[in-house]
Length: 520
Image (cartoon, rainbow, N blue to C red):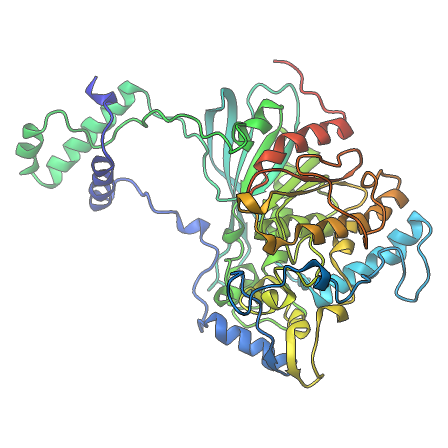
């Protein structure tokens, strides 16, 4: 019975120290999952940022506003000042001014124009010489999550680095599918830390044998420990995982992964940082640095958001080979910066069938032209590495070309959402009172979603319910989602998370794809 007695964290911490000294078990994250090796000349984010400014002949940038509403330089939250550029680019008007009146013109002319605008000026281009990724299954575990038996696969996508061995990139993803499914299942790729969700623990007998072997090895390494162990006969190096009550979401629902499995779906946890770290200093490392052989970017090259989207696409390459996954119904999901990345992924990779965009703000679903909360200057300053270098032009106050502003952008987020059409696109937010800050500009995201709706209609899908005109569109009440079309909007009464909307997302997708899991 002593094996199952709960112990304090101090006891469990000692196991790590003992094991590392014995070199018996590696608890450190394997090097295979690190996103970057050592580049020849490490740089700081400030140095990289300055280098891009020099390339663009920018001598000064406007500072981004403070998120602290009490600060003198706080962001604008006055709706009367929010639209200095009231008209946004029309997704259904060609660059030459002609209207798009057919799906053929959209696919042949307008969509490529919008893609070009985002690639050149906002998110950057993925180079043509990105190396091939080879996927391998590192381990398979049979687990139980929320009462549902599952098969969990820990997979690694190794990027061929033969052209520059100094940088090693390995995409880490964990794929979880129902063990009792009668056929391939829909799956949601989630930008999150990878790893087995509920590792299958050794049985009591197996744990006893492990502990006996560890004690024997301890004594073998240091015979004087025999007396110590004799004085503490009940102590065990390794303890069973203590029982933990499930962590329900703030809205009282079970965790999102539980909801997906209960609905007969699978999910994948894809670690974006394993492809490209979330900072500017590492732009000469990760997949961006590997392609550039450790050198700094040029102004049109991709930033982290595109790199994370690229990694998701390579994850989908693997999922297309997994017989447990319905590869025609794979979605992508993320919150905050990963909400931006999820929308970018969906917009550029047409193989993804659906997206859940959580609280994405500027650079995601919110209009770049809006002067409310997070600003373009926020993305040209500390978070510049998410974007293409060219994006810095729109935050410039002094440059060889004069100055730049958001109104000069050739594209805006309504067109990013439109690139997802006619596929299933769900824009999700919470409320400021619970932590989904006004900084995210919920109204600006709703306006962009409304403005994107006509593209869905043109392509034979149903757009946003009662969309109206984006200039005057008002968000519906909290918890009153617009879920009647392939383009959906819902603001829940939760915080900076899309968890309260996951159950609505699942039901909404199932309705459109006609999915109903077979009973085991």
